[in-house]
Length: 314
Image 1 (tube, rainbow, N blue to C red):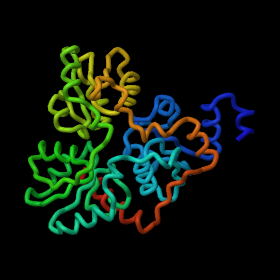
Image 2 (spheres, helix red, strand yellow; image 1 turned 90 degrees about the vertical axis):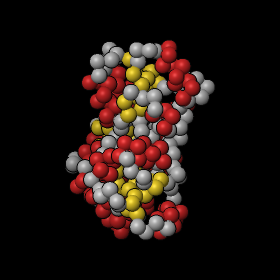
Image 3 (cartoon, one colour; image 1 turned 180 degrees about the vertical axis):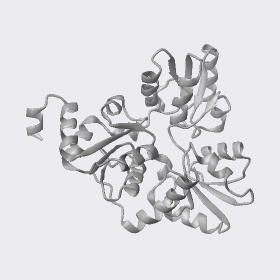
Image 4 (cartoon, rainbow, N blue to C red; image 1 turned 135 degrees about the vertical axis):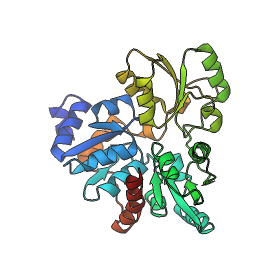
């Protein structure tokens, strides 16, 4: 490491040097800090990033995101080395749905098909019939017979939103995203009154009382598409605020305001798990090729099956 510091004057230069030396590709989720987004080869949501990495000839995938995202990359590219800058970068949705408890829940409803949101562990994916994303879930649910009973896990807010727009009555696992639960309806209404010309855009992981005020609800990629296609110049954004970095890049002449939390401030909606990843940790994981995501092949095959069903249906 001392050699690197002597040869390269900045963290960014060290990372670029190591990336080339290790034949690595760097992926960054939209919710990562700006400096990580700016050094990444690809920026996007979890599935899109994993599929892009799969298509490269890189030997190493560095996933700047959270653990379940890196697991998806490993499932799709089992012969590549997949590393995560901080192995503690988990996800409240993943942690709310443990495989032992979920299997008991599933076994109580043997006549139900299991649809799991991609924000879950490899073990939950292996217990699922179909994996969905916030972009394709409604389409996939709509393709299933109306009489088909469905368990939806792990996000009850996304599941509730999907029940509403698809007119289904899916049985919902009681999981939530801590980031999207921080937004305050009362403070959002106050903000809208102060910014009457703004459109409210929200991720469907938000609770229903927030989604009820949204002019547009969509996945991260669809939120980005909406702000570019809309003639409006100002937006209140109800999702993790680091996505605004890409919004500003795409639409520098538009204004983006982070939806407020309960105290009226906007800082509480930063994802504490995403923030565990830093440029220093990115450099170190490239140097050490660690922490590495390891999944046994039996689990990879079981988890890949519902992912393949999703790709076929979406």
